[in-house]
Image 1 (cartoon, rainbow, N blue to C red):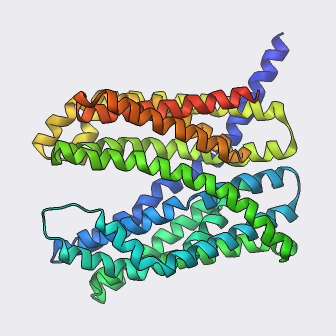
Image 2 (cartoon, helix red, strand yellow):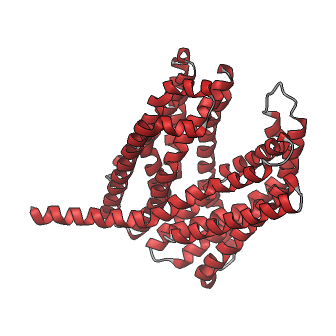
Length: 441
Protein backbone atom coordinates (compact mmCIF):
# COMPACT_ATOMS: atom_id res chain seq x y z
CA UNK A 1 0.00 0.00 0.00
CA UNK A 2 2.79 2.38 0.99
CA UNK A 3 4.80 1.41 -2.09
CA UNK A 4 1.77 1.89 -4.33
CA UNK A 5 1.13 5.33 -2.86
CA UNK A 6 4.80 6.26 -3.29
CA UNK A 7 4.75 5.08 -6.91
CA UNK A 8 1.66 7.19 -7.65
CA UNK A 9 3.29 10.21 -6.00
CA UNK A 10 6.47 9.66 -8.05
CA UNK A 11 4.49 9.36 -11.29
CA UNK A 12 2.56 12.56 -10.51
CA UNK A 13 5.85 14.34 -9.72
CA UNK A 14 7.43 13.17 -12.99
CA UNK A 15 4.33 14.22 -14.97
CA UNK A 16 4.26 17.63 -13.27
CA UNK A 17 7.95 18.11 -14.07
CA UNK A 18 7.38 17.22 -17.73
CA UNK A 19 4.49 19.65 -17.96
CA UNK A 20 6.42 22.46 -16.29
CA UNK A 21 9.55 21.97 -18.44
CA UNK A 22 7.45 22.57 -21.54
CA UNK A 23 5.16 25.17 -19.97
CA UNK A 24 7.55 27.80 -18.64
CA UNK A 25 9.02 28.79 -22.04
CA UNK A 26 5.48 29.12 -23.42
CA UNK A 27 4.42 31.24 -20.44
CA UNK A 28 7.31 33.62 -21.13
CA UNK A 29 6.51 33.51 -24.85
CA UNK A 30 2.88 34.42 -24.13
CA UNK A 31 4.02 37.36 -22.03
CA UNK A 32 6.34 38.53 -24.83
CA UNK A 33 3.59 38.58 -27.48
CA UNK A 34 1.87 41.77 -26.21
CA UNK A 35 5.26 43.49 -26.30
CA UNK A 36 4.97 43.76 -30.10
CA UNK A 37 1.88 45.91 -29.72
CA UNK A 38 3.40 47.76 -26.77
CA UNK A 39 6.47 48.76 -28.77
CA UNK A 40 4.31 49.97 -31.66
CA UNK A 41 2.19 52.08 -29.31
CA UNK A 42 5.24 53.50 -27.53
CA UNK A 43 6.81 54.64 -30.80
CA UNK A 44 3.72 55.89 -32.63
CA UNK A 45 2.38 57.50 -29.45
CA UNK A 46 5.10 60.15 -29.65
CA UNK A 47 3.96 61.41 -33.06
CA UNK A 48 2.15 64.80 -33.13
CA UNK A 49 -1.36 63.54 -34.00
CA UNK A 50 -3.51 61.05 -32.06
CA UNK A 51 -4.92 59.83 -35.39
CA UNK A 52 -1.63 58.01 -36.03
CA UNK A 53 -2.01 55.98 -32.84
CA UNK A 54 -5.72 55.41 -33.39
CA UNK A 55 -5.07 54.31 -36.98
CA UNK A 56 -2.28 51.93 -35.99
CA UNK A 57 -4.52 50.46 -33.30
CA UNK A 58 -7.41 49.95 -35.73
CA UNK A 59 -5.22 48.53 -38.48
CA UNK A 60 -3.40 46.11 -36.20
CA UNK A 61 -6.74 45.06 -34.67
CA UNK A 62 -8.11 44.06 -38.08
CA UNK A 63 -4.94 42.06 -38.84
CA UNK A 64 -4.96 40.46 -35.39
CA UNK A 65 -8.61 39.36 -35.64
CA UNK A 66 -8.05 37.85 -39.10
CA UNK A 67 -4.96 35.90 -38.06
CA UNK A 68 -6.45 34.96 -34.67
CA UNK A 69 -9.48 33.41 -36.36
CA UNK A 70 -7.06 31.26 -38.36
CA UNK A 71 -5.22 30.12 -35.23
CA UNK A 72 -6.67 26.67 -35.83
CA UNK A 73 -3.71 26.10 -38.17
CA UNK A 74 -1.44 25.91 -35.13
CA UNK A 75 -3.84 23.81 -33.04
CA UNK A 76 -4.49 21.15 -35.67
CA UNK A 77 -0.79 20.92 -36.54
CA UNK A 78 0.18 20.52 -32.88
CA UNK A 79 -2.34 17.76 -32.20
CA UNK A 80 -1.63 15.68 -35.31
CA UNK A 81 2.17 16.08 -35.23
CA UNK A 82 2.28 15.19 -31.52
CA UNK A 83 0.34 12.00 -32.21
CA UNK A 84 2.63 11.09 -35.12
CA UNK A 85 5.66 11.85 -32.92
CA UNK A 86 4.32 9.56 -30.20
CA UNK A 87 3.69 6.87 -32.82
CA UNK A 88 7.30 7.29 -34.04
CA UNK A 89 6.13 8.20 -37.54
CA UNK A 90 8.33 11.06 -38.85
CA UNK A 91 6.87 10.62 -42.34
CA UNK A 92 3.41 11.53 -41.01
CA UNK A 93 4.87 14.50 -39.14
CA UNK A 94 6.20 15.87 -42.43
CA UNK A 95 2.89 15.17 -44.16
CA UNK A 96 0.95 17.14 -41.53
CA UNK A 97 3.32 20.11 -41.83
CA UNK A 98 3.17 20.08 -45.63
CA UNK A 99 -0.63 19.86 -45.60
CA UNK A 100 -0.77 22.71 -43.09
CA UNK A 101 1.48 24.86 -45.28
CA UNK A 102 -0.73 24.14 -48.32
CA UNK A 103 -3.87 25.16 -46.43
CA UNK A 104 -2.13 28.26 -45.01
CA UNK A 105 -1.06 29.29 -48.52
CA UNK A 106 -4.56 28.76 -49.89
CA UNK A 107 -6.16 30.81 -47.11
CA UNK A 108 -3.59 33.60 -47.48
CA UNK A 109 -4.40 33.87 -51.20
CA UNK A 110 -8.10 34.22 -50.33
CA UNK A 111 -7.24 36.94 -47.79
CA UNK A 112 -4.99 38.86 -50.19
CA UNK A 113 -7.52 38.75 -53.02
CA UNK A 114 -10.25 40.06 -50.71
CA UNK A 115 -8.18 42.22 -48.35
CA UNK A 116 -9.78 45.52 -49.40
CA UNK A 117 -13.31 44.19 -48.86
CA UNK A 118 -12.29 42.63 -45.54
CA UNK A 119 -10.87 45.93 -44.31
CA UNK A 120 -13.94 47.89 -45.39
CA UNK A 121 -16.20 45.36 -43.64
CA UNK A 122 -14.36 45.67 -40.34
CA UNK A 123 -14.36 49.46 -40.54
CA UNK A 124 -18.10 49.45 -41.31
CA UNK A 125 -18.66 47.84 -37.90
CA UNK A 126 -17.43 51.02 -36.21
CA UNK A 127 -20.21 53.17 -34.87
CA UNK A 128 -19.02 56.56 -33.70
CA UNK A 129 -20.28 60.13 -33.52
CA UNK A 130 -16.68 61.32 -33.75
CA UNK A 131 -14.96 62.05 -37.07
CA UNK A 132 -12.52 59.15 -37.62
CA UNK A 133 -11.49 60.04 -41.17
CA UNK A 134 -7.79 60.58 -40.37
CA UNK A 135 -7.62 57.52 -38.12
CA UNK A 136 -9.28 55.30 -40.72
CA UNK A 137 -6.89 56.57 -43.41
CA UNK A 138 -3.94 55.75 -41.14
CA UNK A 139 -5.44 52.32 -40.43
CA UNK A 140 -5.79 51.72 -44.16
CA UNK A 141 -2.12 52.57 -44.68
CA UNK A 142 -1.04 50.19 -41.91
CA UNK A 143 -3.32 47.37 -43.09
CA UNK A 144 -2.34 47.73 -46.76
CA UNK A 145 1.29 47.02 -45.84
CA UNK A 146 0.87 44.55 -42.98
CA UNK A 147 -1.64 42.25 -44.70
CA UNK A 148 0.94 41.15 -47.28
CA UNK A 149 2.62 39.06 -44.59
CA UNK A 150 -0.47 36.80 -44.59
CA UNK A 151 1.29 33.84 -46.29
CA UNK A 152 4.27 34.07 -43.94
CA UNK A 153 2.16 34.70 -40.82
CA UNK A 154 -0.13 31.73 -41.47
CA UNK A 155 2.78 29.41 -42.27
CA UNK A 156 4.40 30.60 -39.03
CA UNK A 157 1.35 29.26 -37.19
CA UNK A 158 1.90 25.83 -38.74
CA UNK A 159 5.64 25.81 -37.97
CA UNK A 160 5.03 26.97 -34.40
CA UNK A 161 2.48 24.19 -33.98
CA UNK A 162 5.09 21.66 -35.13
CA UNK A 163 7.68 22.86 -32.60
CA UNK A 164 5.17 22.79 -29.74
CA UNK A 165 4.11 19.27 -30.73
CA UNK A 166 7.73 18.09 -30.59
CA UNK A 167 8.16 19.68 -27.15
CA UNK A 168 10.59 22.31 -28.49
CA UNK A 169 8.99 25.17 -26.58
CA UNK A 170 12.32 26.85 -25.82
CA UNK A 171 12.83 27.27 -29.56
CA UNK A 172 9.42 28.97 -29.78
CA UNK A 173 10.43 31.30 -26.95
CA UNK A 174 13.74 32.21 -28.63
CA UNK A 175 11.92 32.79 -31.92
CA UNK A 176 9.45 35.23 -30.37
CA UNK A 177 12.17 37.06 -28.41
CA UNK A 178 14.19 37.56 -31.61
CA UNK A 179 11.02 38.67 -33.40
CA UNK A 180 10.30 41.25 -30.69
CA UNK A 181 13.89 42.52 -30.77
CA UNK A 182 13.80 43.01 -34.55
CA UNK A 183 10.45 44.78 -34.23
CA UNK A 184 11.88 47.12 -31.58
CA UNK A 185 14.98 48.05 -33.61
CA UNK A 186 13.00 48.43 -36.85
CA UNK A 187 10.39 50.63 -35.12
CA UNK A 188 13.09 52.96 -33.83
CA UNK A 189 14.81 53.18 -37.23
CA UNK A 190 11.63 53.55 -39.28
CA UNK A 191 9.72 56.08 -37.17
CA UNK A 192 11.92 58.42 -35.06
CA UNK A 193 15.00 58.16 -37.33
CA UNK A 194 13.56 57.94 -40.87
CA UNK A 195 10.20 59.59 -40.12
CA UNK A 196 7.90 56.96 -41.64
CA UNK A 197 4.96 57.34 -39.20
CA UNK A 198 2.28 54.60 -39.56
CA UNK A 199 3.88 53.04 -42.63
CA UNK A 200 7.13 52.68 -40.68
CA UNK A 201 5.40 50.76 -37.89
CA UNK A 202 3.78 48.45 -40.44
CA UNK A 203 7.10 47.81 -42.21
CA UNK A 204 8.74 47.08 -38.83
CA UNK A 205 6.07 44.46 -38.12
CA UNK A 206 6.61 42.95 -41.58
CA UNK A 207 10.36 42.67 -40.96
CA UNK A 208 9.73 41.07 -37.56
CA UNK A 209 7.31 38.54 -39.06
CA UNK A 210 9.79 37.69 -41.84
CA UNK A 211 12.56 37.21 -39.28
CA UNK A 212 10.29 34.87 -37.32
CA UNK A 213 9.59 32.92 -40.51
CA UNK A 214 13.29 32.50 -41.32
CA UNK A 215 14.08 31.37 -37.77
CA UNK A 216 11.23 28.84 -37.73
CA UNK A 217 12.09 27.42 -41.16
CA UNK A 218 15.74 27.00 -40.15
CA UNK A 219 14.62 24.99 -37.12
CA UNK A 220 11.79 22.96 -38.66
CA UNK A 221 13.03 22.15 -42.18
CA UNK A 222 16.08 20.05 -41.11
CA UNK A 223 13.78 17.88 -38.99
CA UNK A 224 11.35 17.05 -41.81
CA UNK A 225 13.38 17.49 -45.03
CA UNK A 226 14.25 13.79 -45.34
CA UNK A 227 10.57 12.85 -45.23
CA UNK A 228 9.08 15.46 -47.54
CA UNK A 229 7.19 13.90 -50.42
CA UNK A 230 4.77 15.98 -52.48
CA UNK A 231 2.16 13.93 -54.33
CA UNK A 232 -1.58 13.59 -54.93
CA UNK A 233 -2.03 11.77 -51.62
CA UNK A 234 -0.76 14.83 -49.78
CA UNK A 235 -3.26 17.07 -51.56
CA UNK A 236 -6.19 14.72 -50.94
CA UNK A 237 -5.16 14.36 -47.32
CA UNK A 238 -5.31 18.14 -47.00
CA UNK A 239 -9.07 17.92 -47.49
CA UNK A 240 -9.36 15.89 -44.28
CA UNK A 241 -7.20 18.39 -42.42
CA UNK A 242 -9.27 21.22 -43.90
CA UNK A 243 -12.41 19.57 -42.49
CA UNK A 244 -10.80 19.37 -39.04
CA UNK A 245 -9.69 22.99 -39.32
CA UNK A 246 -13.21 24.01 -40.38
CA UNK A 247 -14.61 22.86 -37.03
CA UNK A 248 -11.84 24.69 -35.17
CA UNK A 249 -12.58 27.82 -37.22
CA UNK A 250 -16.27 27.70 -36.22
CA UNK A 251 -15.16 27.25 -32.61
CA UNK A 252 -12.97 30.37 -32.90
CA UNK A 253 -15.88 32.29 -34.42
CA UNK A 254 -18.16 31.40 -31.48
CA UNK A 255 -15.47 32.43 -28.99
CA UNK A 256 -14.88 35.73 -30.80
CA UNK A 257 -18.65 36.33 -30.94
CA UNK A 258 -18.99 36.10 -27.16
CA UNK A 259 -15.87 38.17 -26.45
CA UNK A 260 -16.87 40.86 -28.95
CA UNK A 261 -20.43 40.97 -27.60
CA UNK A 262 -19.11 42.04 -24.19
CA UNK A 263 -17.38 45.08 -25.69
CA UNK A 264 -20.06 45.97 -28.22
CA UNK A 265 -23.06 45.63 -25.89
CA UNK A 266 -21.28 47.52 -23.10
CA UNK A 267 -21.46 50.65 -25.28
CA UNK A 268 -25.15 50.79 -24.30
CA UNK A 269 -24.09 51.34 -20.70
CA UNK A 270 -21.68 54.17 -21.52
CA UNK A 271 -17.97 54.73 -21.98
CA UNK A 272 -17.21 54.02 -18.30
CA UNK A 273 -18.67 50.51 -18.71
CA UNK A 274 -16.59 49.93 -21.86
CA UNK A 275 -13.42 51.09 -20.10
CA UNK A 276 -14.28 49.00 -17.03
CA UNK A 277 -14.70 45.88 -19.13
CA UNK A 278 -11.39 46.52 -20.87
CA UNK A 279 -9.59 46.59 -17.51
CA UNK A 280 -11.38 43.50 -16.13
CA UNK A 281 -10.49 41.71 -19.37
CA UNK A 282 -6.83 42.55 -18.72
CA UNK A 283 -7.04 40.49 -15.52
CA UNK A 284 -8.40 37.64 -17.63
CA UNK A 285 -5.50 38.03 -20.06
CA UNK A 286 -3.04 37.78 -17.16
CA UNK A 287 -4.63 34.41 -16.29
CA UNK A 288 -4.31 33.21 -19.88
CA UNK A 289 -0.53 33.74 -19.90
CA UNK A 290 -0.03 30.93 -17.37
CA UNK A 291 -2.96 28.70 -18.28
CA UNK A 292 -2.14 28.74 -21.99
CA UNK A 293 1.46 27.84 -21.16
CA UNK A 294 0.29 24.72 -19.30
CA UNK A 295 -2.25 23.97 -22.04
CA UNK A 296 0.42 24.17 -24.77
CA UNK A 297 2.61 21.68 -22.89
CA UNK A 298 -0.38 19.34 -22.53
CA UNK A 299 -1.09 19.58 -26.27
CA UNK A 300 2.35 18.14 -26.94
CA UNK A 301 2.43 15.50 -24.19
CA UNK A 302 -1.19 14.37 -24.60
CA UNK A 303 -0.74 13.96 -28.34
CA UNK A 304 2.46 11.96 -27.85
CA UNK A 305 0.92 9.59 -25.27
CA UNK A 306 -2.19 9.23 -27.41
CA UNK A 307 0.02 8.33 -30.38
CA UNK A 308 1.82 5.76 -28.21
CA UNK A 309 -1.60 4.41 -27.10
CA UNK A 310 -0.58 4.72 -23.43
CA UNK A 311 -4.01 5.39 -21.96
CA UNK A 312 -3.00 5.08 -18.29
CA UNK A 313 -0.21 7.66 -18.65
CA UNK A 314 -2.61 9.82 -20.63
CA UNK A 315 -5.08 9.85 -17.73
CA UNK A 316 -2.31 10.58 -15.23
CA UNK A 317 -1.08 13.48 -17.34
CA UNK A 318 -4.56 15.01 -17.60
CA UNK A 319 -5.13 14.77 -13.83
CA UNK A 320 -1.70 16.26 -13.11
CA UNK A 321 -2.30 19.11 -15.55
CA UNK A 322 -5.67 19.84 -13.96
CA UNK A 323 -4.12 19.94 -10.49
CA UNK A 324 -1.32 22.25 -11.60
CA UNK A 325 -3.85 24.56 -13.23
CA UNK A 326 -6.10 24.53 -10.15
CA UNK A 327 -3.10 25.43 -7.99
CA UNK A 328 -2.25 28.27 -10.37
CA UNK A 329 -5.87 29.46 -10.37
CA UNK A 330 -5.94 29.59 -6.56
CA UNK A 331 -2.73 31.65 -6.57
CA UNK A 332 -4.31 34.07 -9.07
CA UNK A 333 -7.41 34.33 -6.84
CA UNK A 334 -5.23 35.12 -3.82
CA UNK A 335 -3.15 37.70 -5.71
CA UNK A 336 -6.26 39.38 -7.13
CA UNK A 337 -7.89 39.42 -3.69
CA UNK A 338 -4.83 40.96 -2.02
CA UNK A 339 -3.52 43.18 -4.84
CA UNK A 340 -6.52 43.70 -7.11
CA UNK A 341 -6.99 47.34 -6.13
CA UNK A 342 -3.27 48.05 -6.53
CA UNK A 343 -3.23 46.49 -10.03
CA UNK A 344 -6.30 48.54 -11.00
CA UNK A 345 -4.54 51.71 -9.85
CA UNK A 346 -1.58 50.81 -12.08
CA UNK A 347 -3.89 50.35 -15.06
CA UNK A 348 -5.84 53.60 -14.64
CA UNK A 349 -5.64 56.88 -12.73
CA UNK A 350 -9.17 58.02 -13.62
CA UNK A 351 -11.12 58.47 -10.34
CA UNK A 352 -14.56 57.62 -11.78
CA UNK A 353 -13.19 54.43 -13.34
CA UNK A 354 -11.48 53.35 -10.12
CA UNK A 355 -14.73 53.90 -8.22
CA UNK A 356 -16.72 51.90 -10.77
CA UNK A 357 -14.25 49.01 -10.62
CA UNK A 358 -14.74 48.60 -6.87
CA UNK A 359 -17.96 46.68 -7.57
CA UNK A 360 -16.16 44.39 -10.04
CA UNK A 361 -13.52 42.93 -7.72
CA UNK A 362 -15.74 39.89 -7.07
CA UNK A 363 -15.72 39.07 -10.80
CA UNK A 364 -11.96 39.60 -10.97
CA UNK A 365 -11.33 37.24 -8.04
CA UNK A 366 -13.64 34.49 -9.32
CA UNK A 367 -12.36 34.56 -12.93
CA UNK A 368 -9.39 32.18 -12.37
CA UNK A 369 -11.54 29.46 -10.77
CA UNK A 370 -14.30 29.47 -13.39
CA UNK A 371 -11.88 29.58 -16.34
CA UNK A 372 -8.88 27.36 -15.54
CA UNK A 373 -10.62 24.13 -16.55
CA UNK A 374 -11.50 25.32 -20.05
CA UNK A 375 -7.92 26.45 -20.75
CA UNK A 376 -6.43 23.11 -19.70
CA UNK A 377 -9.00 20.88 -21.37
CA UNK A 378 -8.58 22.88 -24.59
CA UNK A 379 -4.96 21.70 -24.49
CA UNK A 380 -6.12 18.13 -23.91
CA UNK A 381 -8.58 18.26 -26.80
CA UNK A 382 -5.99 19.77 -29.16
CA UNK A 383 -3.57 16.95 -28.29
CA UNK A 384 -6.29 14.39 -28.96
CA UNK A 385 -7.33 16.22 -32.18
CA UNK A 386 -10.93 16.29 -30.89
CA UNK A 387 -12.02 19.20 -33.08
CA UNK A 388 -15.71 18.28 -33.08
CA UNK A 389 -15.79 18.03 -29.29
CA UNK A 390 -14.04 21.42 -29.03
CA UNK A 391 -16.68 22.93 -31.30
CA UNK A 392 -19.49 21.18 -29.40
CA UNK A 393 -18.30 22.43 -25.99
CA UNK A 394 -17.90 25.96 -27.38
CA UNK A 395 -21.43 25.84 -28.81
CA UNK A 396 -22.80 24.76 -25.40
CA UNK A 397 -20.84 27.56 -23.74
CA UNK A 398 -22.02 30.19 -26.26
CA UNK A 399 -25.66 29.18 -25.77
CA UNK A 400 -25.14 29.38 -22.00
CA UNK A 401 -23.62 32.85 -22.40
CA UNK A 402 -26.57 34.31 -24.27
CA UNK A 403 -29.22 32.55 -22.15
CA UNK A 404 -27.68 33.80 -18.90
CA UNK A 405 -27.29 37.30 -20.30
CA UNK A 406 -30.90 37.35 -21.52
CA UNK A 407 -32.15 36.31 -18.06
CA UNK A 408 -29.98 38.84 -16.19
CA UNK A 409 -30.21 41.97 -18.35
CA UNK A 410 -31.56 43.94 -15.38
CA UNK A 411 -28.09 43.59 -13.84
CA UNK A 412 -26.68 45.79 -16.59
CA UNK A 413 -22.95 45.44 -17.17
CA UNK A 414 -22.69 42.98 -14.28
CA UNK A 415 -25.02 40.73 -16.25
CA UNK A 416 -22.40 40.59 -19.00
CA UNK A 417 -19.77 39.37 -16.55
CA UNK A 418 -22.13 36.84 -15.01
CA UNK A 419 -22.77 35.56 -18.54
CA UNK A 420 -19.03 35.45 -19.28
CA UNK A 421 -18.23 33.53 -16.08
CA UNK A 422 -21.07 31.13 -16.91
CA UNK A 423 -19.64 30.80 -20.42
CA UNK A 424 -16.19 29.80 -19.15
CA UNK A 425 -17.62 27.43 -16.54
CA UNK A 426 -19.99 25.75 -19.02
CA UNK A 427 -17.14 25.34 -21.46
CA UNK A 428 -14.90 23.69 -18.89
CA UNK A 429 -17.59 21.43 -17.40
CA UNK A 430 -18.82 20.24 -20.80
CA UNK A 431 -15.24 19.41 -21.79
CA UNK A 432 -14.70 17.60 -18.48
CA UNK A 433 -17.83 15.52 -19.08
CA UNK A 434 -16.61 14.57 -22.56
CA UNK A 435 -13.18 13.56 -21.24
CA UNK A 436 -14.71 11.49 -18.43
CA UNK A 437 -17.06 9.83 -20.92
CA UNK A 438 -13.97 8.59 -22.78
CA UNK A 439 -12.61 7.21 -19.46
CA UNK A 440 -9.44 9.29 -19.73
CA UNK A 441 -9.84 10.43 -16.11
